[in-house]
Image (cartoon, rainbow, N blue to C red; front, side, top):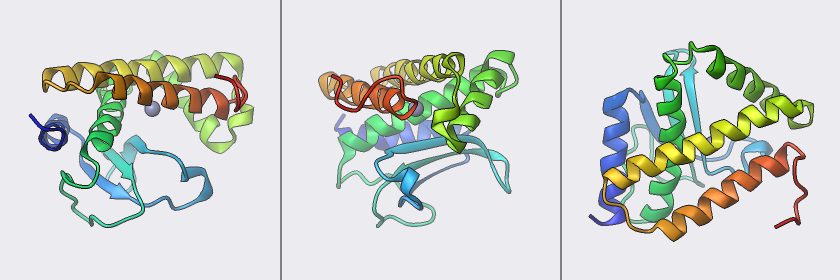
Length: 173
Ligand SMILES: [Zn+2]
């Protein structure tokens, strides 16, 4: 399969499994600039799981997968957000104590990343790695092949969270 086909397959797979909708979304505030994707289990008012792929717009409301512009990048972003969705779904739809502890930590982070305790930061990093691992599983099932790019994105994503929470300084490699 081409990466465009993989993106489209993963997109409909995620929706079949319960992601209510997936859209391309432009950053709406400074904290979203540089963010590639987003998953939330209960977006108001519908309280259903949603995923956004950030991009300075084109595709609209009920977006279809854009197989042309940058399918490899989008497939990797979506696989990671799908990983967060799977993690939530496999944790009794967010009802396990482990997932709730993670989510509480993520809420603190979203308010002010500097207020996250060391233990909360560990929960967040565990969930981030898990989302990459689950994204890896999904892409493997779709015969994805660009694994060096996947690993490069994983490294950037993981480091971004560590820097954001002050676990690592910006310049550190
Ligand atoms: Zn993530």
